[in-house]
Length: 307
Ligand SMILES: *Cc1c(COP(=O)(O)O)cnc(C)c1O
View 1 (cartoon, helix red, strand yellow):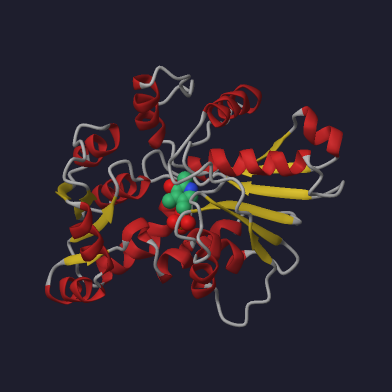
View 2: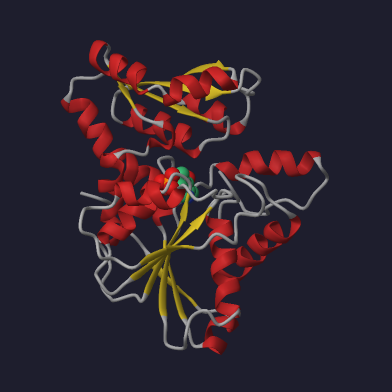
């Protein structure tokens, strides 16, 4: 029922030199518009919305949110309406993400930041909407139990054993799904894309299936200052990575994870003969938005072909 995924082995010199095997799971190719982990996170939620007889997906997100773009596209594909509550009255409806969401028929509501927080965090308002309207309410980032269930299917196509499985974290739901899904002897490393003040550990634990004895750990050294922040070093790394592998990364999540992972390989974190799989969770729709911002500052751009 899920599309088959491609798992590619990377072969650049550092890996040969360190005798470490690194594979990339191309979840970014699962669907052209409902990309990567958002495809997996939305799958059971869309089915649930339909089962409940809802006609609309309503959700929350920032002006460049992968989740907003993916929800808009998923709603259109499944014959549902969609409403996006967008953080910031000043959000630009013409930016590439919001333009795309509107082209899928998403209705946008820009609200100021404090109102956004209040609405997003008000479980009661969500519950009222859920029970009295035809809208199915998805939390920001789409992170709920059904999303975690979808993400645990990430390992479905694995035909060999990996010593380590890695993915990037925003809310932690995707990583929790990965941890739930992997076999006992695969260790999971999560790379937060935000400066984690320590709450992410608990967020992940909440989403784990009970009596979980899986070995997992958060690697907190590669957030580059804060969420969605980039610097020249990261952009250069991503352009170089694309040149060597042909794989485009996104600047918010997967770019930082791969930067971190390769830094760790360089620093001999992994012993020789280690087999690592890294999940490419998608997010490439964000490249256009970041390039607009980089261009304004006269900086080097991400030089991928993007459609
Ligand atoms: C949303 C997103 C994540 C983070 O997912 P969480 O479940 O919120 O941790 C990681 N990678 C990409 C590309 C994303 O779009």
